[in-house]
Length: 181
Length: 181
Image (cartoon, rainbow over all chains, first blue to last red; front, side):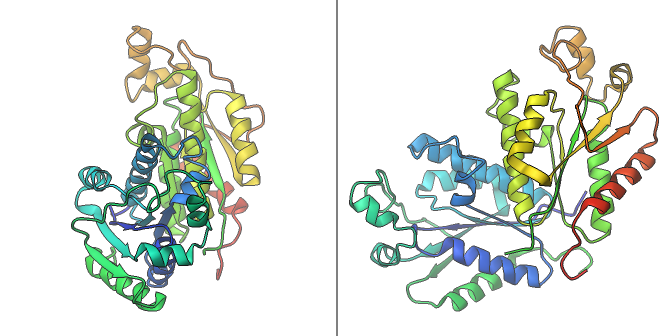
């Protein structure tokens, strides 16, 4: 019914690396250029659609499966999808790539764990180090750096503005032209 | 980040009543008027996001819970949501209304079961009557007519074009004006 599907840009990286901030700011840039965007992140999903899931490996796997399916639904309606999820395991990324195919673009929001812990916007690193949260990525659960991301942005070195600009440009270069434009 | 939330229009009625056909045609009308729409229906969800669910009462309940949560996510991003689901139980509609509040509009796509069985676009009524599908709404599972829908359209009496026009007008009347328009 629309031209589609649109691409899916998966922002992945540690908590505190800047995924949600950047994905929302990039969405604003794309919208200003007339592209409809659908944004998703862990907190949005955990608060509703995935409120029935826990943080076990199984719960995380199902959370990301649903995120991928949701992105597919939105992509099929020609919404550019910007998804911000830690996505700690390479196997999950590979499953997403299998399911989403060439629509799927990995944008690695790279930031040393020490810097993320310093930022700690949700105070979750503090809680994890105090043992009040168990299985927190980067503290007592692993983060496997992506093997072959499509784009990598180092947010400890670049300003937010510069990161937003880089990612927006990457997306505009990889997005098929909109019908009628 | 956007103005929002936008309304959620829930097309409900028997299989074969015309929910999906009408919701997609209405979406085209709204898009032509510059409103971004997000469409959802049972088949779209069952094929991916809800592929893990069965057709038991529990499975249906969870399917509709996820549909509602997904509509909320899209609505929060200012997409007008058109959701086409049989939604056979009044209790489910009430749960949706509790969760979605005044955003939630029930559009009853009303059609006698005999006409739906005649149309039988997916051949599911035939299979249900042959016992090859169990628990099919209207055959061996109940359909509770909505108690107090916001709009009711009788698709055995009206043409598709007339139904699309009625529903589109209802939506345009109930939708808050878009920012800048």
